[in-house]
Amino acid sequence: MKLISLNIWGGKKFKSLINFIRNNSKDTDIFCFQEVFDTDSNINESAGFRLNIYNDISKILPNHHRYFASCVENYITGSFQPNFIDFNLFWGLAIFINKNLKVTSSGDFFVFKKSGTFNPKDLNTIPRNAQYLSFVKDNKKFTVCNLHGIWQNDGKKDSPSRISQSNKINGFLDKQTGEKVLCGDLNLDINTQSIKILEKNMSNLIKNYNISTTRSKFFPGNDKFADYTFVSSGINVIDFKVPNIDISDHLPMILEFS
Image (cartoon, rainbow, N blue to C red; front, side):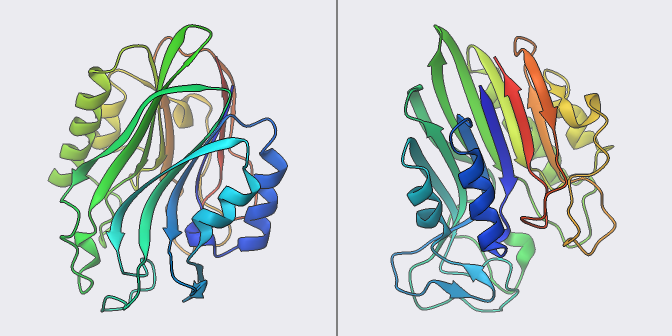
């Protein structure tokens, strides 16, 4: 199987992003996306973001089931605007999975704050959820967890909230039978205790494959890491790579596994 995880930056690089997804659509079983907007309004773009990017992606993945889990409503996350907007808008996580795979369960759970608690004047209050689905392939159960971790304006170092987030993720995955994949933009430095907690029961492929960075040329900062893929011990990793492709301010993580 093939899984791609990517923070899509709200579709800012729309044409190149869509081309990348389309070109990988036939042989990719699972896409895990972060920073996904969805709206039922006729407002397609604002502040450089594609507000209906969820539907845009859905149109080019007709052979995939789609799952969406929002954590912020009626705010253009990433715009740094101090106020809510006056039309329906949702921002969060999306998983697209090939219809040939039998999904047995899906959902999301919050790892930081709760839905509806966001204060647009303080971006540190953005709630965070983890999205998951379980499926069966060749009589083997897999659970994929898609996460966009806590953002803090002082960087990607440890904090009590981030330690708690990692413990909540571990607590959830420990209860799941079968094999597990955790992926996404975790907003964490590679040497944090928050990462070490996740490494207790899973392999960190960013470390194992000596990935030098997960950020593209569009990222203005110095942090080289934000995105991670972890796998449980029973996952057979066939290949893992983070190609330098300019489709977002993050780079895609591509995992081939069984």
